[in-house]
Length: 286
Image 1 (cartoon, rainbow, N blue to C red):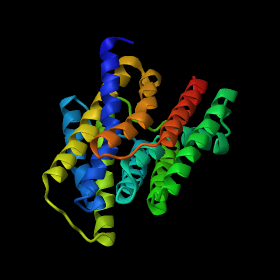
Image 2: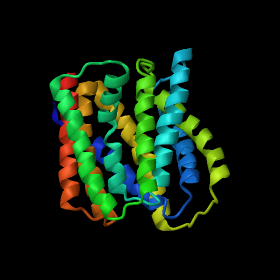
Image 3: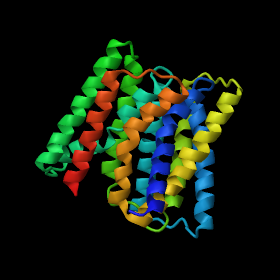
């Protein structure tokens, strides 16, 4: 791997992991579903504009349109919607840890429902991931973490896992950034009426809200996505995916630095065990 690819990968995972902390800051000042629907509207339009400048067009098959709708609703709508709501009650670091279980849950569901055989290393990875979660959950729940917030975070990563399995093989080649923009617009259209129905809107205009909203819209929302696709084109999906191994650690570390969230030894041990489980599952798939 060349130095440019390494820097791109580290930049991507840093931006991606920081999204939980910026969201945690933003939802302290505004209704989460309203905030997220506006964010997706802006990010989606920006992604589609960049895609058009890159020569991409909206040319999708029926299967790909279905994938856009499902992924937009489940990944952006349910996954991020549940996480934004959850972060009214739980810390950003805990939400990042739960979200990092995605590769393990996808492997587990593929094993259970699609009978995809996992080598022994993969099975060990699944059990290691479960053990890491139990270590962290025991620490956090005994420390007073809100059970509703934790349940919402698990619901979110569960929805994203299901979406990942449902749309396998339905991705559109050559216009990926355009598809991402369309998915964001689908999520915006779904979250706005949900916000109308279930939220009492409130917005406290502070510099923290403006800074956090601008950051989460432009950096994790658009820039990280663009860097990701450039990285995949440069070194391939498998090697690029290895950078996701850093997400649990960085998500917790960023939350500790910028919003002063506490880190216990159990958290650190749990994150290390989860990361080892993710690495084991991914290596077994190779």
